Amino acid sequence: MVTRGFGGRRQPPDRSGRIPPGQHLVDDFPVLSAGPTPRVPDDKWTFTLKIGPKPVKTWNWAAFNALPQSTITRDIHCVTTWSKLDTQWQGVTIDDLLADAQFEPPTPFVLAHSYGGYSTNLPLKDLVGGKAMIALKFDGQPLVPDHGGPARLLVPHLYFWKSAKWVNAIQFTTRDEAGFWELRGYHMYGDPWREQRFTDD
Amino acid sequence: MTDASPAVAVSPWQMVTVAKIVAETPRIKSFFLKLSRPFAFAAGQHVDVRLTAPDGYRAMRSYSIASAPQAAPTIELAVERLDSGEVSTFLHDVVSVGDSLEIRGPLGGYFLWPQSDTGPLLLVGGGSGVVPLVSMIRHRRTINDRRPALLLYSVRTSADLLYGEELFELERRRDGFTFVVVLTREQPTRPGDYGRRVDAPMIADVIARLPAAPSSVFVCGSNPFVNAAADGAVAAGIPAETIRTERYGV
Image (cartoon, rainbow over the protein chains, first blue to last red):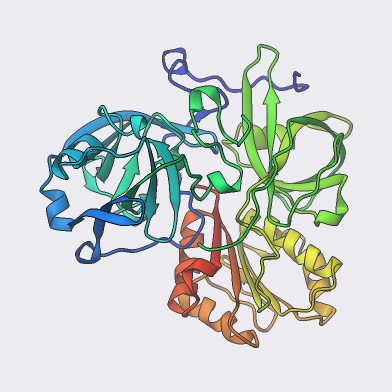
């Protein structure tokens, strides 16, 4: 239904095709998180690939930075309705990570885990084929703690809560297991173009 | 980040009627919304407000519920007018009593009180970030919960205090609720209040005013504000998993 008196502010036409329904454009980079900001020094940082409870491979900061580094530019969309265009990230694609581990994915689902206890679930197909990375830099600069540094997952085609900040593990799971927000009413998949914000959207 | 919150059912979109609008401060108005389909909610939750233009264009923002859960079927939202805001300027400048709005809720399954802990409660709010904390304090009063609770509330000047009189009144009941005001652009006149920005020593100071360390901490406000308060609580020895934060984003 139409809201009496509401005209709305439109995005410029050249950008409107890039903004999913219900989203608005921002130029700044809002920060949202459910607890205190974890501050993980590089020399304490590790990243682990797991099958269920079993660690398969762990990298320290130096080993992780020695992996092939890729740069991608993508639009990002937060479930709180802001979208930001042409964000530039540098890091290790999930493809390169799996190749380094010489690892055949055993299941089609993963949970990403983070320092601070956060987690989020994703289908493996949304992480491979160049679609996702563990980002170490934003706009050419090391990722700051507010934005998930030292490293965050980046899955730009899904709502940004899927791009787990302070990521420290990817765990293969036999089923699609709900993560932190997914247990609390958020959608299991989170496609911004289909407005999959909450469980039944 | 540990807790046992159940998954919260999200109601579908519904029409609400604006029953009352109150100018609370120079920049904040309260909107009392009569729900067409009343819902149960927990203190700390929010709703999404969706505006639709004649051509179908939509804008949506989230606003915390200020009222206590018992107040349903009418909920109260307190909205700060952001000069560059698309929705808050519309709510402030155009909406009047009797209008219909579209909302969805209750939303949010983590920034909720009460939790399963039974120790003291520390609430830290900056600006309109106090809104979900006020819902918690009102709820505590309504259910006659006597556990020690302290609200540290930061605003620029005393004129910006949202629900100030009500909070001072609640403190005068002496039921274990302490209200501490932080003014960033004015010197306080009440003993025990602060005249500077929230920092780690201030957080340690208010924690020491509670009879025991808080077993739940809720912090809501701008991102720098939340970082200052949450980092201060961590530095004071409060376990990170008992500190829940809600940030405006900027």
